Image (cartoon, one colour):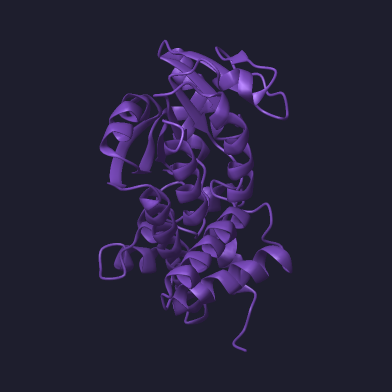
Length: 290
């Protein structure tokens, strides 16, 4: 395929590189002028998409997605597919889908899980929303950039799945960090706690695969002074999206709301910005009961 790729940041650049390595012709554009091995650099976003069979966007938020979509959709060839891999609000995904279909384009919202490591290694998971035909056209590209793609439903369903997943992730990480801090104050050895919880009803991904306690469990950012694998400010972004969606859908999400408030405090008034989202553990270690 000929592929246009808009947004060559920490995630987009390795994704585009993997497509080029697989033999696709990739024409990329980023406002920062990023150069990626194997990817031809376009001077403008419209130049990147003009002859593309598929266009992939990886952008910071819904407002930017809407602005870029308004610029590139008129320049895309009919029958092409626009695949947005950003994590944005559901309403923005659905608005761009409607805009694309109105001019004969296919659209897939396909946010990812797996972080920068997954993008580089081609092991991302894609949560996709869109028509069957659109998903079928995008699927071979998902196979190159990731290890799994789930067709979640119509346009917006991919974003809904990502937002719900990451609300669980944020809430669970806070609970895991709280439990370790409580165990410390009760005199319970962290390794012993891990040995029990990781094989008991407290089992979770945040405990077993991404343990926030240094030296316990598999290697994680906690073992590298909480250098981000998934930054706390990105978790805050996703939690805010979850609460925006909950407001729009009239859904009661008190735990999601509480997690959002805690990460907001951690990132904006404490030392969480630039640290991994699991750095909530040293935060709780230093605090007493209020």
